[in-house]
Length: 392
Image (cartoon, rainbow, N blue to C red; front, top):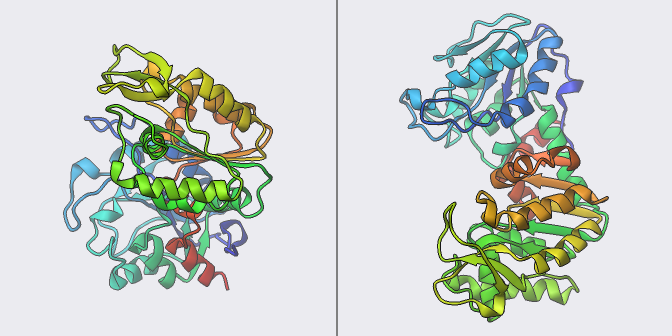
């Protein structure tokens, strides 16, 4: 994928507009609970400042109503955190579409772009206004690359120069390495509550991978497709036939879908719920599968350790609760110990990586969710497509 890179563009004295992904979680009083995305966005900002640019950073936060200012979705907490991390003041600019006062060596944060009317529909007039703010537009928000919106797509059409920031460049390179010419065996791990939200990615991966490990509610639906009783576990009976097709496709190619033979189950999902380990053949009505059992994980982790490439998206169990976290911990440890190239992405995945302290042992951790999955699926991402067009 040919993209003009930020590092190859002259920024000195230029007005640089960086689209970052600063959509961080906040608690009830507006305190940032995880600043991973902010830290991942710093290299682009620091580089622009070091080059003597006048820097404007734009991002979204949550889903505010367009055309209305809502303090709940303000980037004010992000501006404070950025100031601390950069070691210089980052002013939050609320009304910025008609011009921004920023000098070379300074940096400002533009208020939530989703409060602008026309952001989500990629309005042309809004895109042109954004393009007029800058001499150079930098897209460094891979997490929003699957959306064609004014701040991710339209502005790239109308800015004098459009290029990719270091985070976008790294994400594309890592994902391409994992999928374009992967070292075999290629193993994909896809966890989550519903097959319906990840059916297309499962179908796409079934045509590429040597082993597909499914977890969570997805695994339960696949167990049901194999004729197993999953009790009262989270599953989607109406997608059993789709699961059968995925199983058939990967097995036809000689691939494997290692479903659990033993599970950890309970009658409740709570911190004090009793965890019972049993064969999947012995599941009773009223019981829920909440994690993979030790026998199953021993086989799966052996496969992971021998993999040439590992793509991880989602836990295998309810890892937030200690008694149901052992499967995901075993898996994360195996990925960390594997010699193969590993890439992990998605909100729950990053949370698991953090909880089990394996971040420094995984080759690349993506901050993206939807864009990560769509890239894996082979879909064209609008924000990257426009950057490719502007690279010519």
